[in-house]
Image (tube, rainbow, N blue to C red; front, side, top):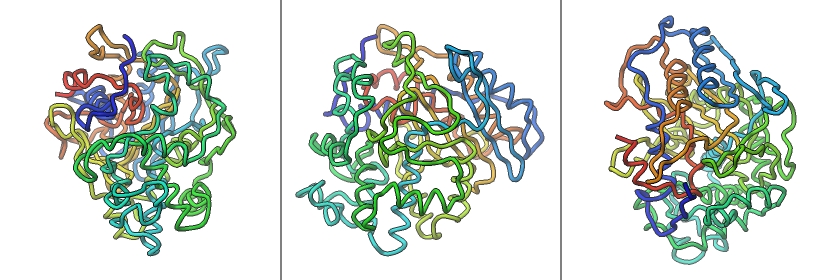
Length: 442
């Protein structure tokens, strides 16, 4: 189908981001019963089978890590390079996209704990040149963190060909270096989506602004602050900001983008200048490191208890029918599984998808990376066609996070939000028709 135009006029319930949420939540329905597993443990054979099923369903390659207390499982399936046939293996480095937002949010909340900023203070007090006038007086730091600012996403402006049904800019701009102020201007210069605080709309612009807020209150480069105060403090060994270097250091898979069939065959985008994502989505990491990070965060190792409570204070995210599909906090969200709520984030960049989720106490964890994006297709009416990969991700998620646990605390829909074959930011620039999301998310 032709790529839908990004419509900046619409609010939450008709934005591409909202469609992404609904599509992602409906894409991986949890089966009625999980594979047999020791209660409270890890069934490695079942996880191997579930992960292989993702590849068998059409995903090029995927790698995942699961933790339950001290028990750990690391797995990989499929190919890291479709030309050579090189297989994937556990521990590959990967572009994790908007999982970066959790790291940025932690750094901001650390500054709140130190008294250098206040969550409910207007962002215009800190960054008057970037968010000027009345808008800067109305939008608070908290609104940037939980995406209630009403500021538009900058990505459609950075890749304008996407608004015209063409992916040519993905190639033309892959080695371009962009400054944060340029990215912010693409978002702030658009009309306000809604009155600040009145609604929710996912916007990468919010998190580039938060990076500049860190620069303002610390006097340091924000990537340096996050590296020192979050990445190193959490003890992560393979997580870093690439800066202007388009390559991934260390072992990694190639990362293929299909863009719903517009790129055929899918093209490798593993080499890319990620200044286009910065503090909103540029991090490189591993599934093991992501589990380590979220465990440290949820168990109080990165934030004082007051700031961790603020991080877990959420606003509802609804689909086109008004159904709450997840709850977004400050750089982290909560969603329901059949065995209870989970916390974490997902990420999507050209060719690479990531999901990282944990039980509220950080003991049971699941992180997965995969190297083929937007493999789904749409019918002539713009309705997404069910894809076997989505169902396979849902079953992997269920085994990873619920295993042999009985159902408790989930929603009646028993959705599998964490599979997120289309992460929150993967569809921001595509304007996927909301009617499609409404038909899937029931």
